[in-house]
Image (cartoon, rainbow, N blue to C red; front, side, top):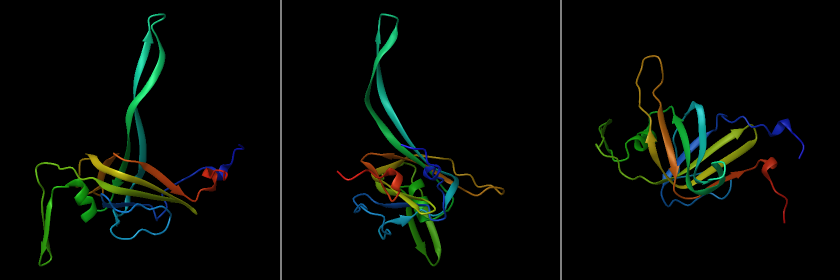
Length: 183
């Protein structure tokens, strides 16, 4: 395959979105616009979105030379780290999944529970590089790490989340560089 500068991706266009939906929501199978119950988590932080695969391995060592003779992958996990810059109902719900929220006469009360509860959801991460549209779907996942929320005069409040996938992750894209020939 020849080298091609146009296959270098720089994501982060204005349309980049993290969508959140209840567990069991119908999953997208194309790049058409998403509708309710998918909800937009809002503006994303400048650090972007980080995808990470963490394989678990067992090393088989041999006596001869005390070297690794083989490595076997025994499991692992896939995570996605997102940083949200907006304070809204979605980011608050991800930060405090057990919270009870009520609004009366224009005043919202958020009762954050001391404990965290399991809160599995569907996550869809959309990113764009000009006309390249990439949609990554986490079919079943939940926020397993939450960053510290800091309120300062010289920096916006951000919400940092690590989502652990419990189900499949798949990507839909119109990127011709990733297309395979029809069989």
